[in-house]
Image (cartoon, rainbow, N blue to C red; front, side):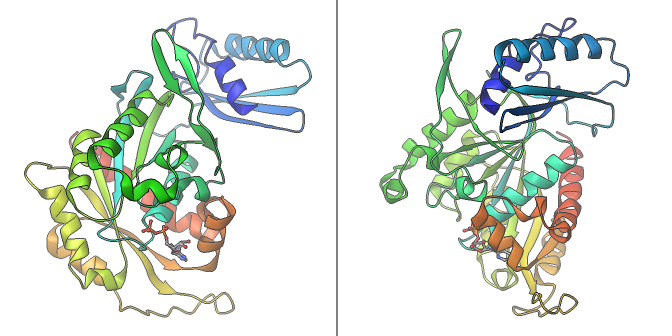
Amino acid sequence: MENRIQSLLSEILHPETGKDLVQSGFVEHVAAAAGKATVVLRFAKARDPFAIKIKNTVEETLRRELPSTEVLVVVKEGGAPPRPEPKTLTSTGSIARVIAVASGKGGVGKSTVTANLAVALRDMGYRVGVLDADIYGPSQPRMFGVEGYVPDAVREGDQDRIVPARSMEILLMSIGFFIRPTDALLWRGAMAVNALKQMIHQTQWGALDFLLVDLPPGTGDIHLSIIGELKIDAAVIVSTPQQVAVADVVRGVEMFRNENVAIPIAGIVENMAWFTPEELPEARYYLFGRGGARRYAEECGVAFLGEIPIVQSIMESADDGRPAAGIDPRVGEWYRAIAEKTVEKVMTNGQ
Ligand code: ADP
């Protein structure tokens, strides 16, 4: 239903610019359940002269096309955060910044950080997409509760477009929608890179402020091809405290700094920085040492974006398909701080 509404909205054009509402970024939120649908439109300008006219058109269209659904259209004005300048990157719309989330090895929480960072950016008012490029273990469909989603292809002009999944107002495309996990090891580098390129260019992202790319863990040749092909603007590196002591995170930083790659590093996130048991919310146990990632970041001249402890809700909500940053206010705050720093870094990178 939500996809149907999105596609109806993408047929409504702004009277002045001639661009459709989805592409113009006016659609902040669409939710539908049990015969009811809510559409939130946001206009950057306060008192946009076209706001009322557009609201009426949306109401008329949805009531006509979905006669058995009760439709509520809400208009919000202003208040959107300063957006990065759009770069036209795909033929389906524009993505302002592509941010890769990387880690030197698996299991450090890279996918969890990607999903929660996406939610925190959404909560700041940005339009966010996630591309799950982790060919070895795509886990975004599970994190966002859209496992089993089968992407539709639609014809637009003479091009085929892939319809992304949508969860918590975040658009999601995953290599996991196309391959079975057991097949991942059979993927040759070029095959995976081609599939990912297609996913970035042909997905109906509309207008996005940030596309987060959940990279496969590690720093091998396939990573170099992926980051070379996907036009990444900045990288966030996820590390755990004990990982800092070993060479993985160093290799991660070096991969992006390699002269053939030269992608700015927005900073390092330290995940699993300490452990707080549910019954002792004030206690902090630094199981793997303390402050390592911050020190390492300083030493190598990379920003330290923040730290996230080990908490049960992060793990549980990943399994429930709703990232904790959108549910647990404490986690929401930690990620908000990381998201703000990331945006600041990415926007001031001189790009
Ligand atoms: P990666 O993408 O680096 O392989 P995942 O994001 O899949 O790692 O995380 C590995 C496991 O650790 C998952 O079960 C996830 O729920 C859990 N996890 C990650 N970060 C945290 C955290 N801060 N607190 C509790 N569990 C976490």
